[in-house]
Length: 460
Image 1: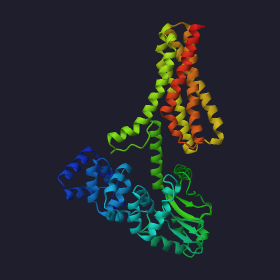
Image 2 (image 1 turned 135 degrees about the horizontal axis):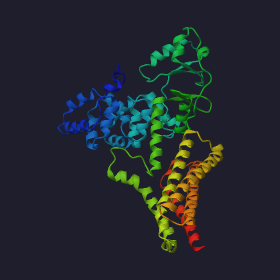
Image 3 (image 1 turned 90 degrees about the vertical axis):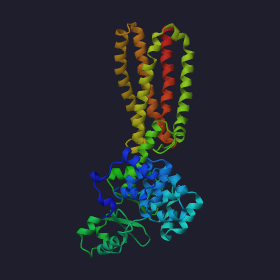
Image 4 (image 1 turned 45 degrees about the horizontal axis):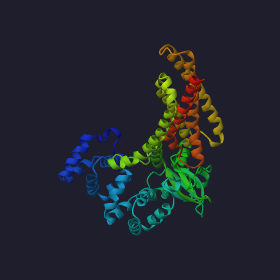
């Protein structure tokens, strides 16, 4: 039984502050045996989580005392920024042994983070076949199907039988993890079909594989975006997806465990984009790196809000005439910002999952316009009553205020829903539309709309 099979969820040791502090104390006293004793009862992912929460020096020490086998399991789970720092200081000979233990997709991810000379040294010293496979995978962009696929898969020639397929599975069971399907290839390595493990068990041994394989194939090409790969696997409830070239020659496969990582990565990236972060922030990052990640969009937002201040200053005379108009600026700005953000998030999510098609985007924008108008009318009626009865303003001011709210909420919604579409057409990540960009745009135009209507009312 492997370590992955050994534990149920309830058996895992909880990784918490107390455990991290105990590990740190043991590192300080260099109690290597005690640390390894604790790790003996931990899953690889938990060891990686501990390393992610330690100071760099302590994390490097921990990784250095791990056996090569355990280190090869832990390394892919370590946060990318911390992993890059650790890799820079590992002895190339030890690193070569660790990478030689990895599956080709994980080895490719690690090697792509290494300096060219170190990566070349590793490639020259790992298993020749693995080295060739990794070199092929390194040709693909990191966030594409080719970048996340593994070239390790079980296949059988189309002229073989079920018995031959079973023999192939047995022969590769030690080397290849997560065998879900056996791929049927012809003499030119062209994908002809797939066979599930269930089919191997229920058919006679002398049955030709072509009689039991599924020929209605779902596959992707290596240049397709990893997010699209995740959508395909989710849509068709797959656990493994073949990757083929333009001639349907089998290149590799993408398994569900890799897709889960992609989904989490894409979701985290979208959330960070929405928050206006320029890069991925991880637990072990220094305050300077975190500041560098957060600051750019904050500066852009600051510059945008200075534009709002200029708009306010240009309407100074109107505001001085009726102070009550300034009381409602936060209300109309907040409602416009919320409406725009809601629409942008829905549109970004729909575009990324494929629920919203670019060919039918006009229909979706029309629906967003209708929703904005309905919500704006509902909120404006509430605002009309509140301003008239609570603030005892005259009815015309309340009407003007309510009309401006409808216009601002509708305008903000259309900006929020349209901007992701335009960015998508320009091949820019639509998620950036929901950051300070939409908020700042809505603030500026919202103020212009609101103060223009107020000025027209008091000067008319």
